[in-house]
Amino acid sequence: MARKQKANFLKQHYDKLLVVASLLLLIGSLGALVSGTSAANRERGRFQDDLRRMKTDVRAEKLSGFTFDAATRLLENPYQMATGGTFLVAAERVACVQCRRPIRLDADECPYCRAEQPTGEVSEDWDSDGDGIPDAVETALGLNPRDPSDAEGDMDADGFTNLEEYQAKTDPADAGSHPPKFDFLRVSGIEVRKFPFVLKSHVESNNKVRFQFNRGNQSYMLLKGQTLGKTGYVLSDFSVKEEEVKVKGLSKPRKMKLATVTLVKDKDKLVLKEGDPPINGMFVVSFVCLKDAERTVYTAERGGSFEFEGEEFVLDGIDQKAGTADVTQKSSGRSWTVPKE
Image 1 (cartoon, rainbow, N blue to C red):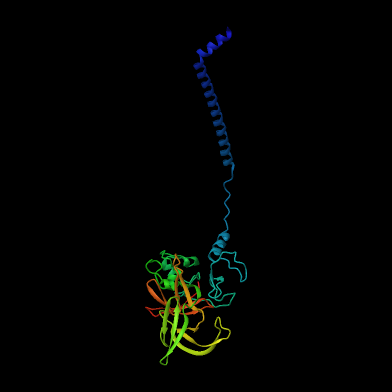
Image 2 (image 1 turned 90 degrees about the horizontal axis):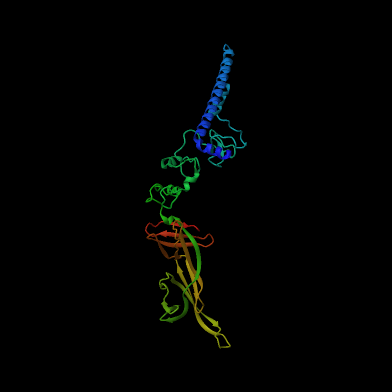
């Protein structure tokens, strides 16, 4: 019965008890705050007493400026290592004009190769980074004269490097101005093919000798000095001799007159003998352009021609050992050697 009365009392006075508890907690917090403030005041008073007790008639010592002056001098004139030492100390250096090793900026002579270095004012063609483009040109183009990698860049994205455009005297900043693509032709292969014609027979009449050349079902009759079809080869010389020939079905050789002819085209010379199979003798060169992403192949026989970028080029000669070819641009007459890819 008493427990029930106590529970009813708590239910009836719950809010009052909560208010009382809150007030007690607040009074405790205020007491702690007052106590902390008093302790802080006491600490501040002790600190002020200590300041008043300190002596104030002692003058501060004057600091020496030697360290600052030494640091300033070192900044203006950085330490230079002796010749032959390592290069782990920061200092401004340039590349030797001959061996390209890093040397002191004020060196009159390279300590490695003894090459004399330029003095006085820098010439217009001076190239600090050795990338092939002079400093003055790089500065005008907005490139870095001390960064050799920008020579391989492509400012106008036309497929030609900045160095290639400088060498060709075109504008590296204008996509419409670039070197001719035929300057970047390369020989991709040299193939020796069989001459498609054979000397089938010859006919002597009226003090003239006619020679029959066959190519599959095609047949050509030529006299000396005439050209064989569209090959460009001219019958320049011939001889007719009696020889013993083995004939199938006969036990003894048979004497027959056989002709030998010489065909000439520019520097090429072919010797064909009557009745012999096709011979090797046609050189065909394949060209590609380094600036052609599709790698289109252009072919030509020696003495023949091929078209590239709307221009006609004649294949003048071939160096099989070096893998190069001599070509001539018909419109300008310019001739040069196309290198191997």
